[in-house]
Length: 121
Length: 121
Image 1 (cartoon, helix red, strand yellow):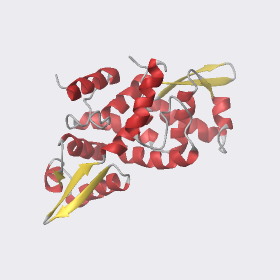
Image 2 (cartoon, chains in turn cyan, green):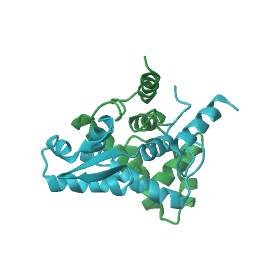
Image 3 (tube, each protein chain N blue to C red):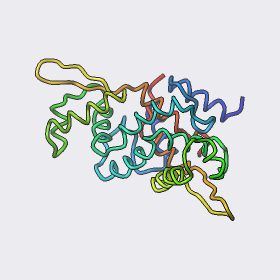
Image 4 (cartoon, rainbow over the protein chains, first blue to last red):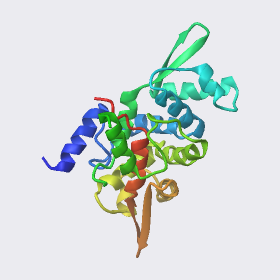
């Protein structure tokens, strides 16, 4: 196995998803529909920052802390969090007054592996 | 340096971009605007398939071959290719009758590194 093949194999395994990296094979139309939904969810600055806050927290993030980081209303933040959740990028649980969010690392790994260019040094 | 720190360092270096992986630090608002534009370009099934065709070709792709893979008009394909180009994901050159496209691997590596979860096994 070549070095590049070995790297691609690692990425595919880590991703755990449906698809080989784009660099190795064209994407099937049905797979493209699901994956595009996830990338579309990332295609907004507020959602990308929300995901970065949730992911970099290293555990869970309270929606109360997430809302404080933006000059936006609670309902707007809730809408963006719903889009991230429906795209499979985060999940959440209500506990008492607040909702807590955490990243779905398998989904992030799948998307990262899909567009990875392991030959690039 | 821990194993995870070393992995993150590699990803940041390979990405060659503006930003540390989301898993390490929250994203700055200005960086989020640029990056969201690129993810938004990926957030469409046709564009994702176009990018996969261009990237998996291993060199250049003629727009004539790309158009043949879809049941869409030439102008529609050209529009999607323009969005990918304006997002910095591909570049192109006209030679004679046809335009040829290739991926910007540094940009793909930047986006991949941003959402990578190197701790995931």
